Length: 525
Image (cartoon, rainbow, N blue to C red; front, top):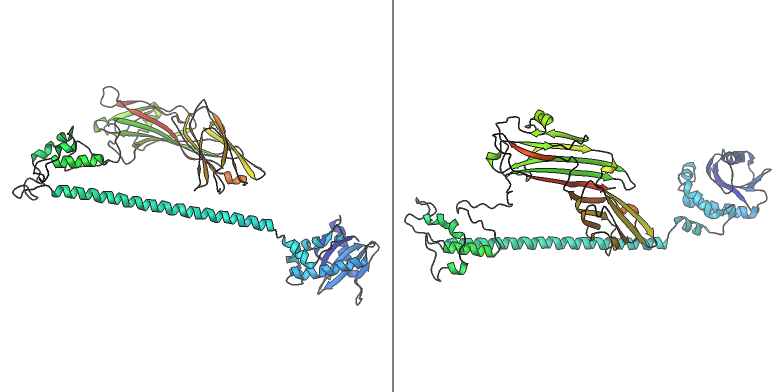
């Protein structure tokens, strides 16, 4: 028995679904199917028709024909059995036995035909078995999905537990901070309540103000080099007398013992607390460049952008009348832009940054921005991969039930990189990855599922390095994008401050210069 094709056609011979089981051209099968309606006699009860080369075994299905095209040597009884099985399958996969219903479920019918007939020969299957085979239900697949779902649920529970612990620790910390502040406030109130303020000329509303006499003016100088608190404590039972500072000194000493920072030379009426220590240099110039790089995982550079600023910070007003002489490094790819108040012509001709109005000083004092006032900005863009400070190559490979991940870095000789951190995303893991080799240190952040590879310094002694670790099987796309952070003491523009020129004459002003390159968005995608 050799079945050449199994087809469903309409009354005019148009093929709706046809599956060929032997090699046959489209023109030949369409010709055979188109010739069939002309061979079927009206009113005949036969279920097969023969020609010189083929035999048609058919069964009407409403307005359609279910048709088997076989060779003349095939067993007609087996052909009829095959036709009967196919006629039971067609209604199982189609909603309606018309042209639209057959065409809509064409692929499902072809898959069912393949389960019944293989290489032209009938398979020993039933309708229920064909349906089961076409469903392609796998116990192993179900088990794998259940395991993966349980891992996801377990990871979510761990995340919720960690989040609740963090929230609880924050609440406890806030409570402790609030309790410490209330205790400090209570000590302050109790200290002032012990002061004996007289009613004649020493109270509020009198000419002496708060009621502390001129002796209070000596408080700052007395606070320097004071003896221990035990030596200055007043005898028991005696309150603090007006104009005496022993109890106040004792109170300040107790605050110092608890870790509070006390400024010695301050007036009681104007106590200021500063969050940061101001710079000691009278003039500070800061050069900073921010680097944005996007590298492709298969090689190549997608984005390279450098944005730099030169900022000035002056502490004293008498140092404000200055000009700044710089060197730009001569890089033609760097485009400079001065502040609107800077004399552009002076900068273009002499590389000097000065205000348009020479009689106007630069702003002084501690500004809201720690770097000071911006004088000059620049930008650099390139498509040359050779200027990238650090390139990363990641090679994941699956071997059995494990994925081996090899990562290597290569640094350019232009920069010495500091505090390098390479963050590699990982799939959700129950245990930390198995690190087999590393140049540097590593840390696994289980909450973010990220492996952090840290190198303190990359210089001429370690321009390249590698790391290898093993995780459970995972797709290679899981390990991207890789984020990189580092700093460097050199910039792409190579902008340098040559000197600070005072406009009122005299020797050049002393200044401090800070230069830094930092990464803003450095990725391998």
